[in-house]
Length: 118
Image 1 (spheres, rainbow, N blue to C red):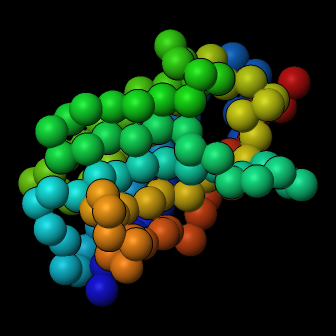
Image 2 (image 1 turned 180 degrees about the horizontal axis):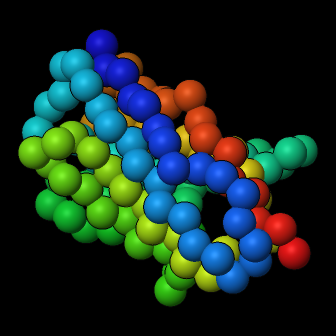
């Protein structure tokens, strides 16, 4: 089992910044990816950013150039630096950890609210 604990959400004005953290504990393999998803009211959950064990990153087009994902393998922690936040970034942000091609070994955090006011 793996536990994911997110922190860092909150309320900011448009143009502001936040940094999310997600600490993983439990049975963690070295070749895992870590990712951030978000879900706004009435919308489906969508991928925001992803980083694999090699440090390769992937971003949603809507956040490229504003958000940066990083990870500290020694601490089993993934971060999401969010700059120039916009009202459309308002959502619950979820941390995700898993292995490619393994639907069983896949875990989610409880979510943290991010609100960017206009």
